[in-house]
Image (cartoon, rainbow, N blue to C red; front, side, top):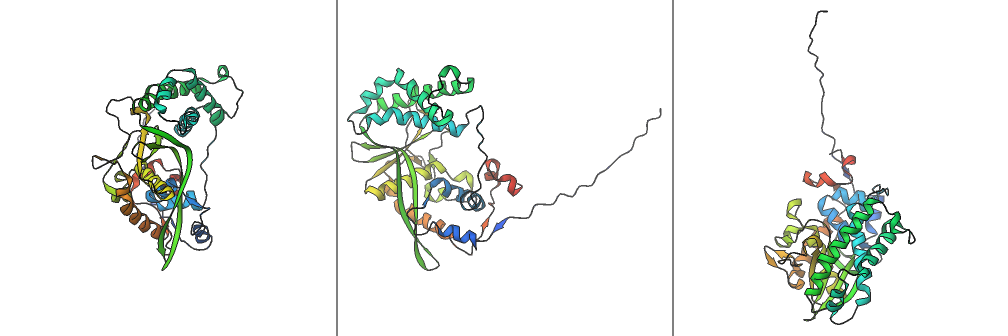
Length: 332
């Protein structure tokens, strides 16, 4: 057989997808207006951070109400892992609310059966939704999650709290909120921010410490409030912004000085660990010094969010798209 070679070329024209623009009119405007002057409708820090990431992402999630497919499988994902840890800590610490010197009681918990019981109860209620299923019937993945949560509690969170006394646990999984006023179309309007504080401690100096448990990669630093509202994703720190917003809610709710604290559980066994935020390398000890700057930037963003002449558009920073739940819709 004679071999005949041919060069075959296929021309493909790749055209960039048209940008997606959603005007704030009709039903969209009606749904947006539901946040205005309505204390029953809270804007969460997570939703607000989504708007900072990408206005269109906020539209998909909070206005259009698109739901991400969350089919329960055989494996525990990172959000569920955090949910289990949060629930276990709530079960352990709820009997300690308002007790003086809880560090003594916390120290007695380390490595004891009470920790295992709290973790098992958290897994059953938050993941399995079966209070009767024995541990012998759990899958290997669930057993692995149980062991990791046990390690974080017995080696990180509980020992750290036991070694750093001087606090009283006041609230656990406590709903907090506050109003923020801004001007829209020449009229003063109000949006209520709301969230759920993992834990609120009263420190010896009268400051309320707002504890937020984090299971992800540590990220406590930021460079001023302005950076938290930047259009560049790498300059923002959603965890820092969330705890500063929680500080605003607690401060407005009870007129207390507050202190944001991020408990990055995987780092708490280090001798140099501190839960404090760091602004340009300096620890954030008191929230009040950020109040005015935070409110000013919040008002500017709220004015843009509720401005009917500014449509929801796609973000310019493509780094945001890598882990966006709606990237297939945007075809990015």
